[in-house]
Amino acid sequence: MKSLLQVFALICISSTAYAQDGSSYGRLEDRRYQNKIEVSRVMPVAGVVISDFQGNQSGQFTSQNGLQAGLLMDFGRRNGVIETGVLYRQLGATVSSTQGSTNVNLRYLSIPVSAKYYFDAYASTTTYIKAGLVPSVLVASNIDYPVDRLDVPDINARPFELSGVLGVGGKFMISPSFDLFVEADYIRGLTAIAAATDLVNSSFSLNTGIGINL
Image (cartoon, rainbow, N blue to C red; front, side, top):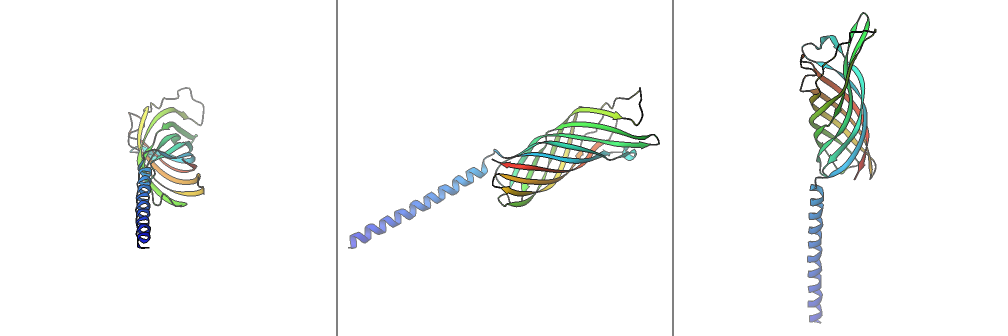
């Protein structure tokens, strides 16, 4: 009888040790999974943009409405991630006169790179903040006058722009695979729009999109 009790006790001790070892291994695997730098979420986004120019010569300009759309991605699986992707943005400003409104139109292809922090990455609903840089390439520029002109000047806009971005948003779970995102961003140029001026782009955008969790 005593021998049977000893064997039973040995089996219990071995089982407990194995369970603890398995649990530790599972936690280690979870940490490794969370620390992997890989795409965790893909987000098609679209939004409205209110833009204008800032600088010593900006007094004559007023804001202009535009659109933006693109694809963003989260890299990482913790509260803090890196967000990047590509956006098409319509920026510019308007000058009003007795003849009407003249629109300065600038179109950019941008690759934002931001540090993004989810306050609770694993909750069904959470808020987040982000900050980073937005390198952009000019893809089109023109001036729309209220009357036809033969001497339409060239804007001579720089082909490259660097901006800073600050943003805040919310993530709302639709299902384990999909989330709804709503976000507000402020983007301000760090480089002038043209060599002969100190004007920089300044824009506020309200965006929404669907997050596809990978």
